Length: 332
Image (cartoon, rainbow, N blue to C red; front, side, top):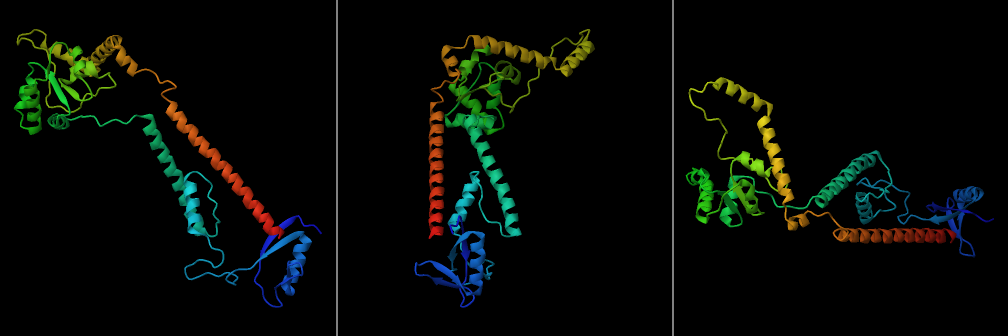
């Protein structure tokens, strides 16, 4: 009779109960009352069986460390499967207890959160270019000026320099003295001060004027750190006829945000006019990305896809070799 199905049977030989005898062709045959009965059942089911005997000669028992005797799993194999699960591969482990199921639940949550966070952080680094932290306080600016890495410019003749040099704080005095002794001044219109700005320079002025000329530029930062409060006000005579009316109008306009609106409107106008006069060199800096700019990224992507295809082919070959070896083992 030709058998179409194969099965592996683990047995523990015992005289007259379950015996393994070899025939003249070297094929194992079951003997004993349990062995003969098992042979009859499997034969009628159409199975061709392959016998294995436990090396330790035991049916299997729980050891003091709560592990079972019998087939051992290598730690490296388990660690390999755990590592593969982090890469979104299926976790092929036998579930044998409620404790293991609970542990696997926490592990599944872990392998979902950690790779997701890693991908999010990696994509954020790829999407946003790395930049040094900008200087945003006067103390940081003073330290940078003292180290010689940065410059700080101020309007020539302004009272700010004198106030800095007479400040009670040492870092402000150092900053004022550096501006005074190095003559870091600019003159004329604030609209022309942009040429003094670079990655290693700063400009001192009132907040309103800085926001007027530089707040709409994405490459520039207006610091929130302040050393003086310089409010705008109307200068009038004591006997001015409409002081109460003037104060009422000013309060209403301030509450409505008109001053801030006018400031933003003029800032946008300035930015538009400045962009029309932008040099060709600066326009080249803001040019759109081309295929040549992304060639390195596509090259790395192609290499990664190539390695993925190779791994897929190796997995297919290993799987087929495993199936072939098992079939040969059963046929023997």
